[in-house]
Image (cartoon, rainbow, N blue to C red):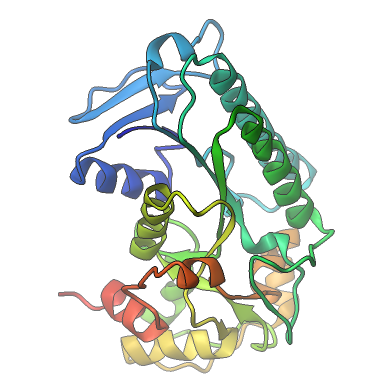
Length: 301
């Protein structure tokens, strides 16, 4: 298949591109940095003056939208929140424009999303059929993002929203910073420790995207989390156990709020999210438990 990726240079995008190429797909990356020579990958300019990617793409089987300013960078001040929000709206609007012009529409549109659409809770477990949504910054951003992406359905394109949890990988995301205190013997519970962490190994996250591409019956929200979410205190204890490090230096909530500002909500509050759609469709996680995931990521082979 010919697969076009917006946001292909990010943490998830790089791993996804490598996997797709390895599996024999033709990959095109939409970029604002100019064309970059790369084996088995081509680049097309977009989101810059004079760019007209629709003239270069030809027939496309699948569009994947991973574009947007990272929520892991910055302190979520007003300027950063605006960048997070509008980077997603602008990129998605441009993809809609491109698809509207293409004479032959893609078979699928895979749009990144986040479990932040669900409210934080210590008791409730959320699956894709949950009607509860959060009214905070991240929740409203995700809702608007999905609503805009959903407009592609009017062109007869199957659309899926991949609601990622905490993606664990050594090359990016929040995990390296979470593991670092344990590596230097300073790990401990963050906040109350009762908040839920819905996580997924980067390999399973990539496999889930490919699984949705290949399974034409899947559309709409898809939770990309392991079937084994944990409370933060148990998440930390597992890191310590795998690294054979102590778990005893707590990071109180007020310290995290001072250090991270509004973004502290990401680690001090959480959602218990279940990947119901993937499991019912027969997706098999390579890393269903945190212990397996961390042994893969933290122990040198």
